[in-house]
Image (cartoon, rainbow, N blue to C red; front, side, top):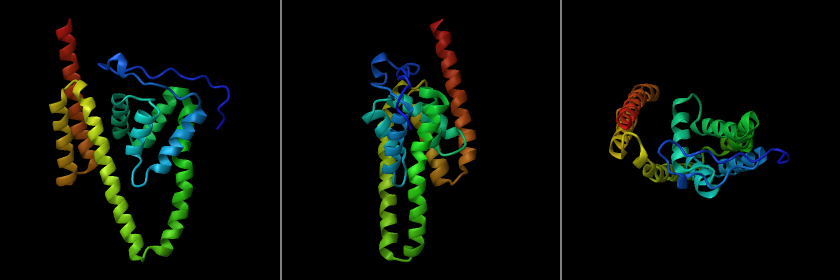
Length: 213
């Protein structure tokens, strides 16, 4: 990916209700930089790249605020396909159009795809070894911890949610119970509970707008 001529896009504007001091600290200078950063986060994402994406895009590069990252992730959750791929597509497109979307997705998937293909061939030879099985279980525990840590960091952004932190956390708890405890299908939870949440937010925003007028 060439870093030559592309102008640097301005940082994404803060979302609704986000004060100016919470705007991004920086922005990618080129599609090549997008490729490198998404490639770096993908190569760190053993067992799940979402916590690494939050660390890289929000904390390390400063390209997104936590609220903006949560907004992109929320949209990515309801679209078909992997969440992080949807985030890469949307963010890359916002920065450099189709070139940015292609660069972010290529960085996210190209080298990891080659690594997974090589690991698959190796795993076929070593799957029966107890040491390999134990290592995979240990990595799964670490991945679960990373996802929980990312969720804890993003909870702080709910203070500016139109429904308020308590109601938003209530929706999150209902989703966790429906999927984790009741084993309801993910599609049904996203369409049902997600649709209810969107309608609730729309009602809250209309009510707030009416109160302002």
